[in-house]
Figure 1 (cartoon, helix red, strand yellow):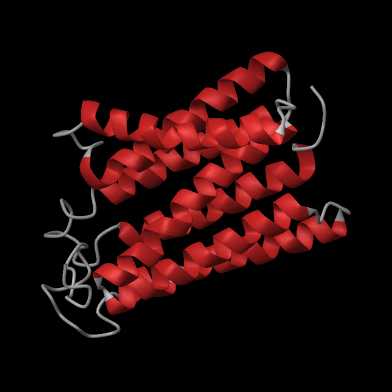
Figure 2 (cartoon, rainbow, N blue to C red):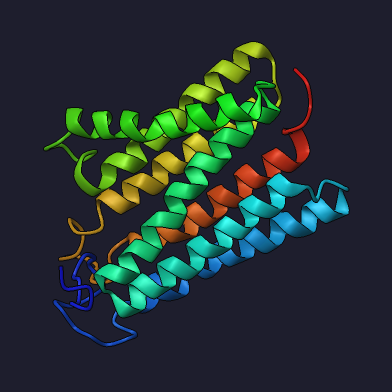
Length: 220
């Protein structure tokens, strides 16, 4: 693989334009992730909840913003890896923390269950291949189902984190829609809608971290 080739993956970039600012909106809207991370740290410090989980998750969100910025400026496969990997890590770590804090599972079982998401997501991707939820959207679609499932289970258990997860699922649904329609609307709106995916996902991560700070350690 040529790790330095230009990737034309989004509406805003015209062809294989190597211009660093070839995706200005997609690049600058990554500030949403940076702000979400800073917000979570400030909130946790104010409420006396600046523990390892919040610091780790905020650090990952910061990495998401940096990685996504690199991809939407350099637009190369290596930058694409810097974009995708932190997102996957956030999904796994957040899920593991939910299992530890809300379900009261031990570290080992929480980590094992979180890692089990990877083959499950791959299987889901196989099931939805050829649909709008498949391909590059498959992992995110699987993450949405994970969010919905945990919101439902914790809701039945009476845990107050459920409301935050449910709100996050609703926001992520809209966010995923804007990711999906980026190319279809390109002929009408040349900037596409991927930048809205960034803004909403930054908000989503801030929301999920806020829920963890305020309700993550509380018993049902």
